[in-house]
View (spheres, rainbow, N blue to C red):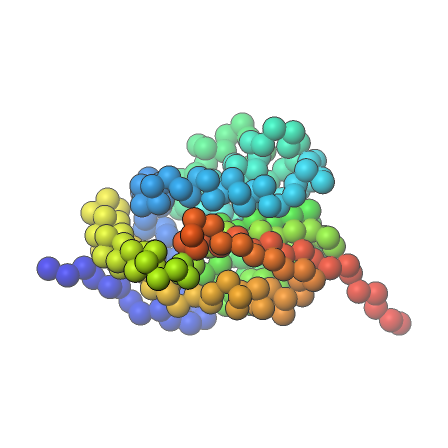
Length: 250
């Protein structure tokens, strides 16, 4: 018996609705499967992403965890020794936020139900922003980058942690086998969802590679963009910095 592949990726509002539905339906098993399917390596990746944010330059600032899910990335930042600021965790799938609420009680993390492509925040609201494994789920990543640029203050950093395809042939072969065969099977058995974990390898396969992602960030107005591969290229961390505000003539 073969697993259901689920609907083919759509565009625009239809894709957004698909993604919202998917993550709403797997929210109850999301944390467990994240750690199980990544062999807990995802925790190490999140630590590296938060370190790359450079929050120490403004430890009392306001920071955004976009596509926050159940707040793991925001909690990693809020729990750093010396952090005195505030983290807003925003996601458009309310059940994901609801699932993470017990984890953020008594912390500096607060939830907001909002779409990364239409963020409900004023210009220049945040000293920095993080996105963990969420950009490839946007129906239009370019518009998401523009929104993230808009809500950052000049000089603010955006750090993106996202899956990618390893460049090495042997690791890529193992990765492809695991993502296409093992992960969908285990994900389906544990989550009970017929196609959510078949969507994951398709979304990674169809997502731009690190160099193209860097180009999209520059087009969205980020002045400096750097990226590095982690764990042999299973994931990549992009760091983009917003440039100074442009003065407007009268």
